[in-house]
Length: 487
Image (cartoon, rainbow, N blue to C red; front, side, top):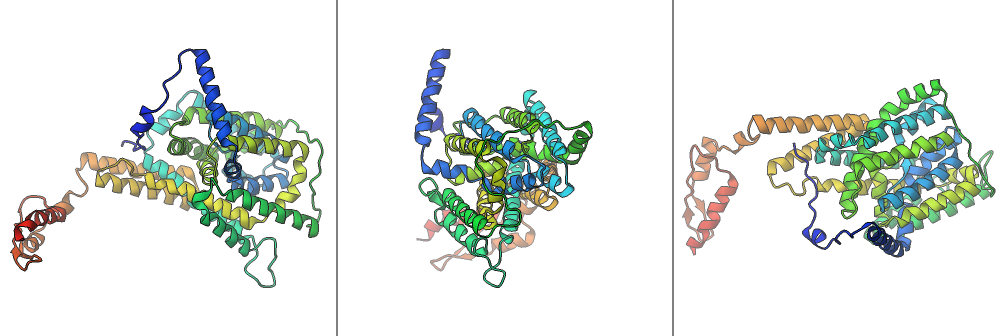
């Protein structure tokens, strides 16, 4: 059950620079490379790309902060810090996004902030242990590429569903309930803008345009039609404090939320992300152990201060790439902005975030899903055998369908793995699954043996080879080879 991966072109291998000799030369070469990357990264497309994942970040972070289950100031500061660190480490627009499963369980079960922090630390401890011991390689090695693509496709479809829920929060077209600030018209406008400039994201910063429009709408709404007990942005110096969960909170958080998040983080935030990073940035592949350790460090530090549990994700990377991010500059800038607003505006931004139109956020999240799902088209790259191509497609669809249907990455992963294993056993010990279909029956043979009229009006006899396998392609090939005789 071999994995099919994207082939690396020989041109990339032949023209790659030879490794420098010596430690000092290595540092100089790395510094020159980073400087060149920074110079090329300062453009609008990079800034626009950094905003591509806001459709996932803002709704979750706002919901948890308004209920007091995370600290908004700490989430902004540590989220920005991880953006900068991961950007410098991986040298690509590596996203930093909330752990969605923990967030969903926390909101539905009204977990305390200590339990939420415990859930994040529990997941990170397990994932970091897998990275440090490099046992994450075992999961990656024995996971077929079709299953990974299925996880990405299933996540993409899930993003589409969540995007629809965000758009539905807006008011419908016209009518008495129509409001100017959050309606379907804004969603249609954002949808058209994104897809008109879909292949011009490096030149036309669509994410930045939509984010700016949404921010202007949020400001106008907050100051002209504020909700009851509205919170206004207030400049100052905002601090964070240590949050130490109790033993009961740790047990509750780990059992209730961590166990469901661990497979999601390992599969989507580590393995699927590493595969996507290799697709998008083959010259700078991100190793699964390094990604796993990065996830662990983020929460074993940040959650002690009330920060929302963070992870990486293939969907976030796909979104940022689609909206124009190509270098680490994009998320370093985003990280600096988060730290600035966290330190000097902090939790006072919750009112502004709450006023942001969900219609625009929904479209941005939808595009994130579209871009992530698009990588599923490479599931059969490098696979020549027709039967293997068909089996890979079936495994991918099975994984995606079970992930979406059960709303659980772990179930989707197990379902896809079992399907792939069944195909492997069937082909290895029971012969080709299409053997019986390839044998012509007597009736088919008789039909093929009848004279076939040519364009010149003559008949070309085609003999049926009883007892031998012959498909329609071979018959067509025989006819093609005989056509010159009819001239």
